[in-house]
Length: 307
Image (cartoon, rainbow, N blue to C red):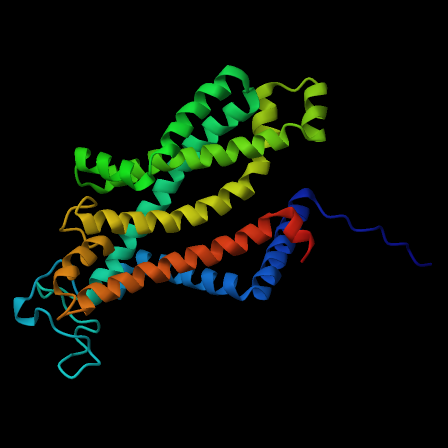
């Protein structure tokens, strides 16, 4: 007599693990369909790995000077050598090693600057959008005042007053970019707080704190991640601009902005000193923009349903 087999049920942990793998597979399928997203993701991973393993990848000390090899052209030119693949700068420092170490500065500024801006903007935008009334009017008046002033002007003025430091640059970018995150957060909160599940939670007696952090905040993750990706690209440009003006990190720190500022003096006769840092900035910004476009399409429910 055959014994009927009982249906096998997955435990909570196994179910969550299976769901996670299914979500990863789904994201992978979306990524394969989008060439721009694939290119941006690959470039982003390569840039992050370059920053992490800079001491291993860089063939020379980025700060070591060798005046005998100063202004040496790239290796594929007639006077170049593969000891310095991208040539050397006016002090004989290896351009390839300095560009690799400059990745660390750009990613650090972009990541922590966006992190500070997102945290400040999220708190102020969430409070303003949900509370409304006088609190909303006061917060949005301050935010609109910041947004009315050109962003780069504020950054240049503050940086010229506080001095050159990586910490100060990150702090300046984080504070001055937070109004943009606050505006986006407030707009999303105004839309979400009128939804049915928020009204149901309010009718069930949920506190304002729980509604904001359990019901509204999870729905803000998608738009904020997309905005953060684009703002990281913008901050890399702004840091390079500050370095070009001599207001970013100290000259001894190998950053792409500092390299551009040093190379502009020799642009006519030794163009590689400025060209290759500019290419590095362009590639990094392109990777973040392509990744941001793909994340916007994936995290937007309307676009996701159309795929």
